[in-house]
Image 1 (cartoon, helix red, strand yellow):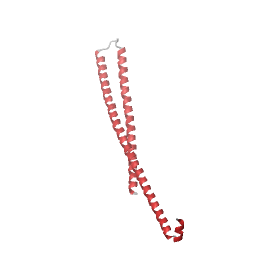
Image 2 (tube, rainbow, N blue to C red):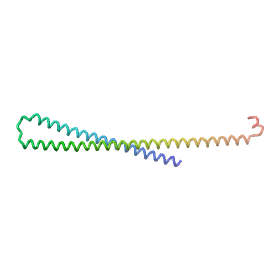
Image 3 (cartoon, rainbow, N blue to C red):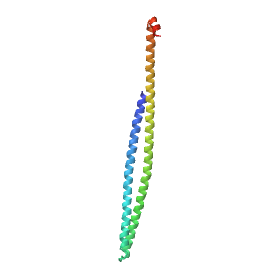
Image 4 (cartoon, rainbow, N blue to C red):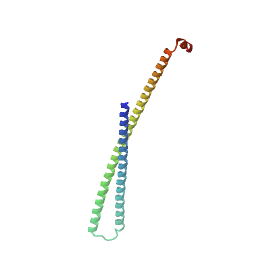
Length: 154
């Protein structure tokens, strides 16, 4: 019976690990979504800025203003590149956490099957013991009955 209780403890631990893996995956999905939103905002802002400057090309701008605009757009492109890297890293992390969750679920499932099999084996062994006791009682009862009564029963 101690092996069964040890298996129950293992199932509880595997359940906690699976739940932790599921929470970590959910957190990573939220972080990836936030990173993708931020990337989209940066890209939208860059497009808007280019459109504003593109519409106003007819106006006279000094070289200094154009330099600052190009410099700003360069920094914005750099930020977009960095954020793209963050989203890619989040995708990689998501894949790893999804694999970790899958492994935890497989472990939990296999432990539950082992517990189920062990419980079935214990129930079968108990049933055999009960049947053996019943057979022994019937045998004792048969032997202790008077000889004439035993012959009539046959």
